[in-house]
Image (cartoon, rainbow, N blue to C red; front, side):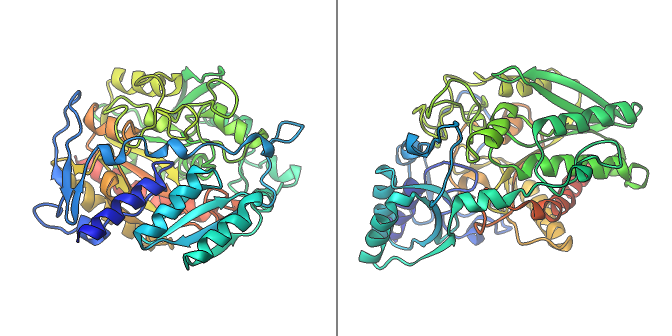
Length: 480
């Protein structure tokens, strides 16, 4: 048992807290989701701002805050060799490998390769890890893995080729949408198209849709919020956002798809959809999103500052348990949480709007990618809120709805246990500070075949299954 516990800890250290898709190396999800009076090895913890995270034991040993402290300091952006004269980062010859990691020694080997900046971590699950291998490091990494008999598959042979093929251009007439806007949900669109779509809705459906700017990004781009409401007093409210991590292109595409489906079918929607005030923020990180289209496809953070160490991870910048496990103090790390809670205008805009609103908040959904997970608090540590069984039950129904819509399997569970501790996340803040009953982070497709460069052909299938999950959460929120 002790050796297993050490392996769990080491694997978490290896993967770090780079993204909502990383460090799936935890004990079996089955142990986390048993419908009993408690989740084995998981402590129930009330929301209480200002308290230090509590050290808890899992079934196989003790995992402390110190174990997961500063895990992502080695996860930095690619070096300047990848920056082309025109300023664009290219990934020619870089590959994505899926590695079998089932022993402590294998985990330690990957940690060394990561610390030497030979690889970066993308994602993984309970037994495999996705790593990005630089072209000049491929021989070294291959020899290191072969020497330890570590099995691996190359899932993307040339990352730049995958990026180039991810979003094939449509003909101009395809973008001149017959419905009066340019969104097609057959391609990943630039910021202007997304903003133009929101403008179109506000102008076309003034009795149903209200559009406002709730703040501006670091570089001055508006952060826009679309409200869909029948105007009835007493409506419950649900918040949905996407695009907080710049490279997760599938998320703003999914949020705008859900908006379009609601508006197009509003009169036919059930009461638990119509009698909710919907608040949609499709793109919380507009600067980063544009940067992924023009400079570095794999950029994650916002665009504060410049150079390879620019940016803040906005999903480590929220105020509930800010700065704890899984949030780096290293500005070069992709999980750098900033100088303080809500230090960034993007997160401050969300905080100011929700906390200052008179809406009857019952649901909060933040879309991310990748990994196919439905996660609920707490994320800051391996603990759960007192009503975790409600969150688990609704999450399981949402996962079944996804499968019913033709989608793949989604894993459900508390974020800190199912993945890894990550303090400063938006869903923890929604639940812990704002007391929103049903708070979820949904990690969309896929499970590692394409990772962050999910082809545009997957937009509609992914968005349709996400819509099915949203409707389940809406039904629960309506009766909460």
